Length: 332
Image (cartoon, rainbow, N blue to C red):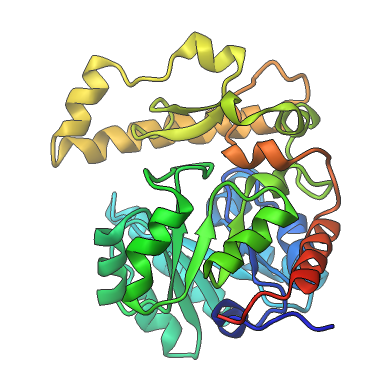
């Protein structure tokens, strides 16, 4: 039996309404390709592709395309923290379009320039949001859908539940994707039955055989419970969901007095976020690849509660798809 079609499957050109969210530093090419090959869509995280996994951006995309003929997507973090970064992101978006990528996920900032470039060649853009005011900015920018990041998500979690976000955003008339807290097939089906057009998962795919993160990181996700996930301000200056490891406890969760002062200033906050980013890029890269487990600085969401094993990414997608076939929720 075929899967029910949703707005997400139509926009992304996929069979399973499931996105493997872009993750720094975890989105290696093999993982992205495996998810797409199984019928969902893997999203390229450009800094992971180039800085962590060592690929020239264009060649990295071509490598992924050598592993799968199915659609892949790209994440564009569009906050204009510096002219240099913005120019690099513009180049990456243009290269992705030249290489045939037609599905984009934007985060932070105003997505209008990405929408203009992508829509011109028939592609679609979905925008990460945590509340209505950001959703309205995405709507004004012409995005085709919204990824509703709830309080159970890894990375930069939002303040609201999946149901609260659905109730708040459904009247905007855009397809909504549920991001946060989905670790089991039952939760996947539940989000679609709530009305979402699809689900975005990150943590579940870290605990996969294709993901190049360390064995201790993957095992920590399998062992962790929901209450083991805490929010740390020490990565980017705003709360990020991490596993409450000994390293995290030693470091503390709150930004220091100087950092807080910097982050309160309209201009100063960009400098502070840049400093955080430079430090965290190195720290998270080192921690995620460290096979000793001593650098236990690991991002994860509350979906850990439903993750009980390390599996091939394709098998995860197929198992979730089978649950959807059996449930047969309404098309969205």
